[in-house]
Length: 369
Length: 86
Image (cartoon, rainbow over all chains, first blue to last red; front, side, top):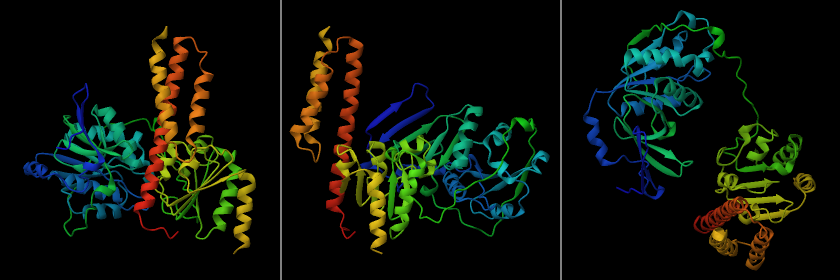
């Protein structure tokens, strides 16, 4: 095996083996793992169904079903919402499911559908279900829903969750990405129950089928005080007609050098002047200072971008930020400090006060139109 | 009292080497900066202070190394990917 490093934790729950990226067998399962597939039916899987705001079954859930099916286990989908006839139909006719479980609770009846995405609300219900049915695997997608719910469940069930899984080798062996996706780690769990979130893009989506899975109902006994559980207030998405940060061919990012959120308007003006229109990003420093919302963050913890042209304005160039944009084709840096690290990796650098250069640049572009 | 001396000299040498590798800048200027930074802290006497300065130096070294490797990464990418038409 291409074993570089093997770490055993003091608590013998999970065994890690870390592989270097050059040895990654990301898309092909090792031959050995075939052997495990013969243990048919010995595992019981529960897939937590996540619904999109429109009531459709999410891509992450379809991928989770495929992942669960890799174990040849008995797969049950847990549908958390009772009122949506449409979603029932859709979930039932998904390939790979052996049964569908619907949470049937009188208290649920009049709740907003979004309430079923709240981990604090679901955790006692699923814990009760698990204690009764004793599943061996609980799956969810590595999305906001899964990332919120699975760790909470893990806490109440006292097991170690396995997150962001990209490969399923056997009932207790999985591959997951670590160090911001730079290395693969083989994880072996000795827990009775495995709580897993899977990376949706690493598994195919489960297809539709004619056959309908039978529906069971589950009535949770646990009741809880409504006022102690957070309630869903509203869903607010920032909508804009600008290109999306991840897929834009030009990205203009601002850093702490812009000094305030109002000054980001300069970047938006420049972004609108460019053709094709540019997306606007920000550094962690700018986000932490509250200048812009955090969905603009570019960097290791934010979005990783790789546009044709990346314009860094007032950014000194922390390594974590540079790591998020290093694959850009051309990098242009505008900063008043000539010694800023960003100039070391920029293709073109402009040393100057951004409060003069950016409006000047916008004007020039508009003149040349 | 002198037992941090080898560690300081070791860090100094490694920083000098890393400084000479920084792309773009003339290497004697970068090296001069390292010298200035060390001279600034040359009066430090207490063990704790020296330790703090050492770990700060290690941090700077790591940043420089990351920067250099990122620069190399960009250079390789530039050389071995063919779409240069932008």
